[in-house]
Image 1 (spheres, helix red, strand yellow):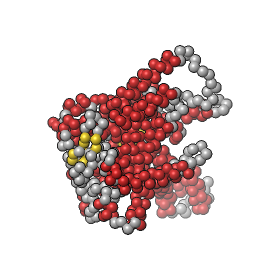
Image 2 (cartoon, helix red, strand yellow; image 1 turned 90 degrees about the vertical axis):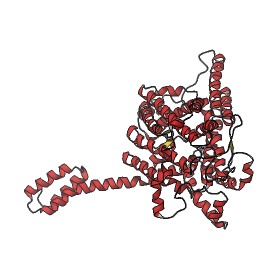
Image 3 (spheres, helix red, strand yellow; image 1 turned 90 degrees about the horizontal axis):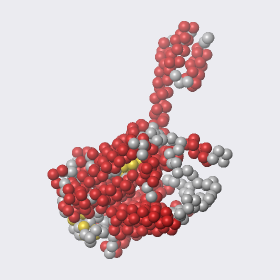
Amino acid sequence: MLHGNSDFYGAIDEEFDGNGNINDVTHMSIHANGDNNGVDSTRKRSIRRRPLLQSQWRTIEKAASQLPAVALVTLFHLMVGIPFGVSYFPVGWRSSMSAAGSAVSSSDEGGFVMDGAFPIPHKEALGIRMFLFSTIIGQLTMTYASNFRNCIALQMVENVPFCQSLSYIVIKHQGYGLEALSTLFFLFGLASVIVGAVFYILGRLKLGKVLYFFPAHVLVGCIGGIGVFIAKTGLEVTANASFGTAFVEKMSLLLVVFGFEAGLRVLNHLTKDSTGTSRYPLLSPIYFILITPLFYFGIWACGISVETAFSKGYFFPPLDDTSGDDSVQSFLSSLWSKSTWDLFRVVDFTTISWAAVIESIPTMVALVLFSLIHVPINIPAFAVSTDVDVEINAELVAHGYSNGIVGFFGGLQNYMAYTQSIIYYKSGGNGRASSLAVAGLTSVLFFFGPTIASHMPRCMAGTLLLHCGIDLFLEGVYDSYGKYDYLEYGGIWAIAFVMTMFGMEAALLMGAVSALLTYAIQSVTYLSPVRGSMTAATLRSSEWNRSPEAFDVLDSDITG
């Protein structure tokens, strides 16, 4: 057996390194005690503690390795939450910090012009918290309900145009007061509950594949139209004015955004490989993070004070009760500020306009349909990227839970965001603990994010929105060229144009007309069931949710 202290400790260490099993170590200690009375009790106790210490150290080391991923995703939440958070309400629904008539926004519907004061202070802070609250609920739900171990939830920012369309409808019925805001938040919550219910029913009945039959060119056209809307909103947020002649007076603000956007486009072009893929996927996120310090350096180099830049509109107004106050007590008092909890206090069922709710039904239908499209695309794509086999119907049920919960509190829709999830995965994020850490840090931003946003320049938000809008537009109408026949591609342009000029409801109608027209003409044109022949060597099966092993078989030159 063991014949000396050195052999004894060597055997114990070998057992640690081999298995790391505390029961085996205890057995070895007792056995050694029978043959080696020279081992004192103090040394045995220290040996017994070593597995626990090693386990704790491994836990700490694993957690520390994921801190960069958690911090990076949380920072992205703040950077995305600021531009989209200030975009949920039309510019013409003026913040209390805006001068009267300084921000006017016109609607596409009947020539209605919006120009009124927002009923509660800190409109932008409310929007940022709306984004963060939806993201937090989505992250917590996905942590426990999703089969992915490293997915990141996000508020469904593509639905910003629908939020503004609902705002116009409500204001036409109730004006600009608290009653209108109450009805609007009721509609936000109702839409989320409906989206969650549809997700849940589809997943529970295992009908997830039904979503794949949605006409692809209609979705692509909607993406192009939403891209134009988001780019336009980015310019309006930057100038704090409606799109039009007022931009001439705000050109100094817009030129900064155009400069940053042009710089990013040049960098993206120069860093592409021979296949057109970016060599540095984190280039754009890092660029957006650097905009704020670069802007501060720029105004310092030009001899412009922060106060002067603020007075000229380069910064957002104070977005919270504690903005501009540097005392720690005032900073922490945001926990108990009334404006912090406005998100949960604005709905008053006695003031809801049911006429506005009825008029909002077409917009709500379009919102629900568009919300359903993202998930069947994101889930299979992320499963392939992470080499994980998941069931799409189970993920639909998880999305049903997250949207139903957030809708109960009047929140906006959320989903698993593919881009943020990939960044989180490639940065080392994995496991339930780190996912909860993301939700926890995002919860901290819920309280202090608007205060931080007060020190962010408008050009950061404007550049991010403009860049996202241009990318979505190019994805819709440029990248799709050659992938569809002329009739479908013409429908893409028609849907994007109608959405830009006439709004969401008209785009939904145009999409239905385009889908029916395309089906009818193609059915008449191609009377023969065999349209052509091909080897199919480069075509992938439309079965999106295959397991990674099945994809390996299909991709193989021998078995595929």
